[in-house]
Image (cartoon, rainbow, N blue to C red; front, side, top):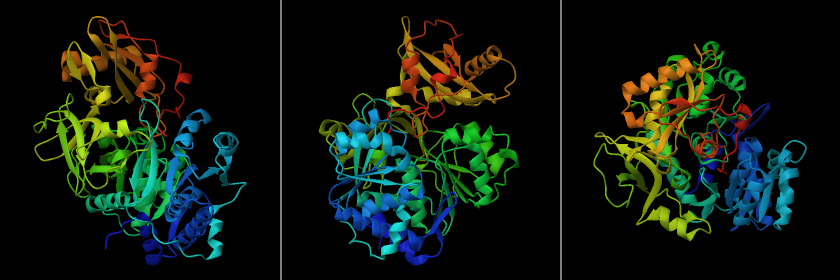
Length: 531
């Protein structure tokens, strides 16, 4: 019988492989029996604090404590609100005010900044975990059994997402929606029993949770956790921990390809790589396969969709620049951008809408935005895509990222794919900027590879020639900016809102170079609005 809550997946993993390593983080390791016992013990503590039927917010970075807290919240019958550990107090306060948690669990290094916010909001029960505080793995000592499994239709997750456009919205997902989505993904991408999964993506985010935390327990696998992406640490751990499944993002894959040690790293254990956050350039896919021998399987989803909607199936042909086919039980259609009611023919670009059992119930306290996103049973994603004659989905862009150049719709992702094809481009982003003549023109922000041949002028000339060869004239960038790094959201996506805030307009009627901003304007861990 299929699980109706992901809590059952952990129970099953502990029954199948009690002594197999479940979680590895640094020098700390626990097996599945210990994992389940710690979850049970902490779940009872949360219930004693009145968490059942309420919300429990966690502000914990990637760690064993974070994994135990997540499952304990669900096991306690609470709605888990995982918050990104990079949030500032200014970002945290409106989220906590919206969530109104009964209990707030905070990692020790974050407590000094976060607890005053909780006190201002009147949150009574605050628990500090981690080094120098209590370790949740110690909750296994009581020997308590799990509380009764939660109602499948009860709220399980309150996952905050704001994209890059404004205040974070709380996405509400039921236990059934989460469990169904795990089963849907497994139908396309069966996980090997007992595999070793490396996750450096934030476990508080939909991608890290679905493809790391939940994927691992589904196959009684070992989740090897890195607190954050660091190139040297990743290369060390791949061979040492015999990683089989590698979770990444475009930022991680391009960063590792540029790392001087990547060519001498032993990648032989890695058999499956997943990519999320945003689409990978075809050239990056090819270079990664040449380096590691492993294929990168791209998928598509969003927090509101539980989160997985489509994936390239394991063992099937991988078509570059596509995100595969809908997971079982899911319908995906491409509709016109203007009304969202006219279904477009195969091959034509429009807004992606989806329907399936994994969709959110709605946004917490946001009835108008819920009504805009969920219409007649369809989730309107705000993403632009197309479905080819074989039913394979490709993502062209975000609807809001579309630029209108001289009356023509331009989706920057198409232009970015061309830029990424040049071997000296490490990262690239294209945005529309105001132009008195055309309405908007395109600005290409380029991060050259270290050691790229020539100077910025030579690279710009080469990119202009490449764009002229592959793109219609109105799709060619009118200006270029060369930078040391692009701003990223906490989910690893390029923060185009930050780029637009800097480059509000470029008076360019010909392709020129605009001044690059200092590297300090865009630190490597730039925070966006994503929670």
